[in-house]
Length: 304
Image 1: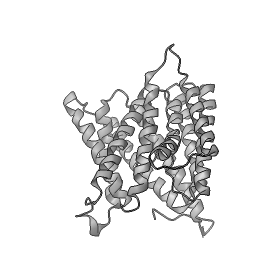
Image 2: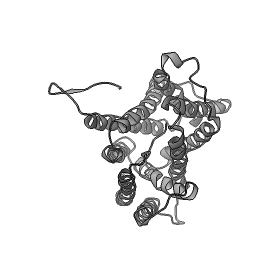
Image 3: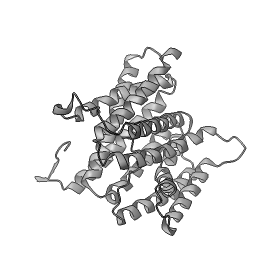
Image 4: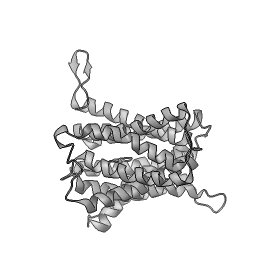
């Protein structure tokens, strides 16, 4: 339990706490996205390294004291590596997309993650795709096409980056479904964060900047926001049904659109709203179906 909240002299219910945790998670993810875009002139590898170096702090705090000396041991190194590699690919693609695509467009396209999960589950896990899931997939694809506007005139190739993130997210989600049966959350997060740190560190030879005090503060906030976002997300999912808290994730589009307009001067396009609407409806159909079947699902932007 992260903390207890009291309302009117009474303890909040688990559902109320779960909603609060999810809102806090969305806020933390949004802060991370905004800082990544704000630091677009900083070396990419340095931003990546700082995100996961400082993001390690919340992970380390989760490790039980009695297991601290042996927490890294696992009998499933292969699956940890697979999850970490795809997680790193996804987060690199996301950061590139955030830097080069309007924030609202980028975040909207990341919501396609559950659509890719559904497709890959059918291809590799043999899950049946019935009409409900087919309609959800079609809605998601239509929404993505509306946002991307794939024409040969001034097409921005960086729009593929959030799509790569969504595909990587699907691989991560399937891996986590298996790993979570035997591995603690902090261990799954640790290997992913470690690999991402090493990828960022490899770019040191290309030259990093000596950050100002202001930039240093932003780096710290970037890492802590990303780390705590996942902890809050996990806690929310443990305390309430997925169908209750998952729709709150779509608040990130509101935060992205607001930040894009007021901080980065990005006008919110009608096509973004329409496309996001299709994607949100499609992914929500998937989550409602999974909730009905009492299956575990991983919501958009789940990194750990």
